Image 1: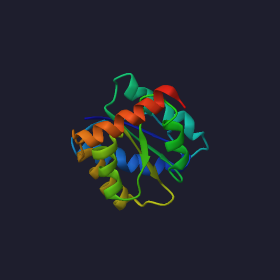
Image 2 (image 1 turned 180 degrees about the horizontal axis):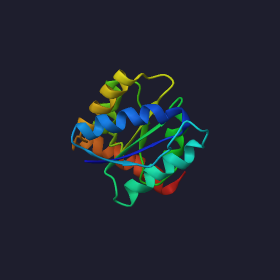
Image 3 (image 1 turned 135 degrees about the vertical axis):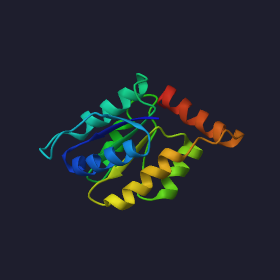
Image 4 (image 1 turned 90 degrees about the vertical axis):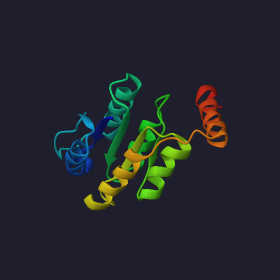
Length: 149
């Protein structure tokens, strides 16, 4: 799988750790920055990850900021991106299985490297469950995105 990674300054170090872990697990990594701990704006990196997915350059994405909240909010502003913040493995896999997320948001100032590694593994191993109830719910989410009301 092709994974797009993006982080602001607060998420830079965790992004760098995850980049190697993801590559070591057999996935290709598209690192979209940032490249240091110098202050930058998280929406720029969430947008870059989302746009890479929408353009077909990545299959899924991971965005990292201090709390994970801002990165998730920004990613979700792009039509076609479904981003969830996860601080545990259950949420990470369930959000793919039930909600078909394509971007995972992580909180670098809350979630340590070892836990983040397990969360990412759960996210990457999960697949959307093609059951009627999940498809029905996803279609309702897509309709909300389409109408914006």
